[in-house]
Amino acid sequence: MGEPSKILLDEAELPRRWYNIMADLPSPPPPVLHPGTLQPIGPDDLTPLFPMDLIRQEVTTERYVDIPEEVLDVYRLWRPSPLHRAHRLEKALGTPAKIFYKYEGGSPAGSHKPNTAVPQAYYNARAGIRRLTTETGAGQWGTALAFACSQYGLDCEVWQVRASYDQKPYRKIMIETFGGVIHPSPSELTGAGRAVLAEQPDSPGSLGIAISEAVEVAAGNPDTNYALGSVLNHVLLHQTVIGEEAIAQFGKVGMTPDLIIGCTGGGSNFGGLAFPFLREKLAGRLDVTIRAVEPASCPSLTRGVYAYDFGDTAGMTPLMKMHTLGHDFIPDPIHAGGLRYHGMSPLISHIYELGLIEAVAKSQRECFEAGVRFARTEGIVPAPEPTHALAACVEEALRCRETGEEKVILTALCGHGHLDLAAYGAYLAGDLDDHELSEAQLATSVSGLPAVPDGRP
Ligand SMILES: *Cc1c(COP(=O)(O)O)cnc(C)c1O
Image 1: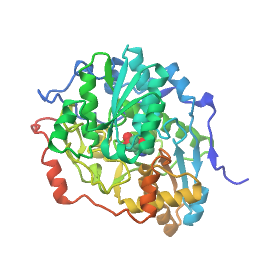
Image 2: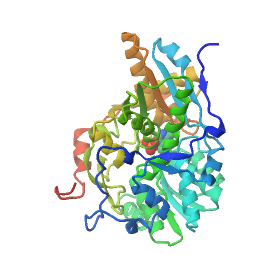
Image 3: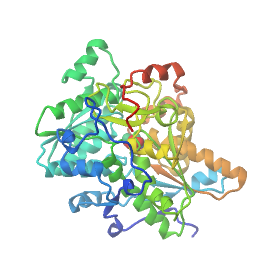
Image 4: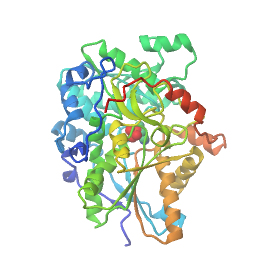
């Protein structure tokens, strides 16, 4: 037998705590501001939307947070997740690089999203909340939250970006199967939705609009809270279970990665895999390069401005300093690869500003080409999002073929693409074009950024 193709952990090796990178950063990220006063917000500003346990996790600087037993019980349905070695992809590329992927597609939603949906539902149920609202784009997050709510007896109401709602009927059915209620966004059910529809009756929607709708309903109902599937500190915290497992799995074969590559929408699967390794790097125990990959049509890290902006389109959320394309930004409909959010997690943005990670943007045909190559070698049809990371893996592996370097590459295969086959269909039919955000579009969308005086950190 040669080198293993799959590194597994026992159930007993499931991590029992999440890792909080805030404890180890050389400086803290800039504070989140109240949109009215422009002063840093306090816990009370967030209580209409989140339970106190999650608010505490949002701001804590404790290095580790214990995972509740009730959450571990649900995690055990699919965790620990496998770490695979992509022997067949390596062979097809003729590369001496060793490519590993941490596969999150075995979860109930088919992605990493349940890693945070489950604890979010748990803490809300424990706080006596009866219903959670949320937005979803492609549908992964709505599915994950509907599943998590079903575990703890909560109702779940999801606003899905209209364009995806129409294109991906199977997500709706899956959300309903888990007991959730789903609406296309913009909808007539909220003031935010009605305002958009009044201006543009055929609006394709955006994550920013759907967030406004879900937040509005949660803020107006005392028994209802809101849940966000990415971007926030507590979400990235929960996702670190991925990286902690990966460290244990590499330990079993006596290896460490030289390069970690992940796709970034709001930054949660990337942060979840990378942060525990970044802890090792910051402590001087590991020499590793960490690379974020985003779509050329929605390039918040590589081309967005680092500024205070709203998390949603209507401007209802607190102001977060992040790499942003502007909260009015709507990606071109030609873009099929997910990762469509206008901003980047403030924590990832800060870490990028500190120079601790790299970022690159990829065009969609290169991504789908890598996704198809991966499917034909490794046998998994990846979700469109991680094909961005796979495109960067292929690029690096081919570079290693030139240099002869036996680099160890680790990537986050954060979901499968079984419900995104229409995007593969479009690619295979030759209907997908590359689209790069133009300077003019970018200038327009960042022109709506809220004014925050320079004196602010
Ligand atoms: C939601 C999602 C993403 C993007 O969100 P991040 O917070 O950046 O991880 C990426 N991949 C998959 C499979 C997703 O479901």
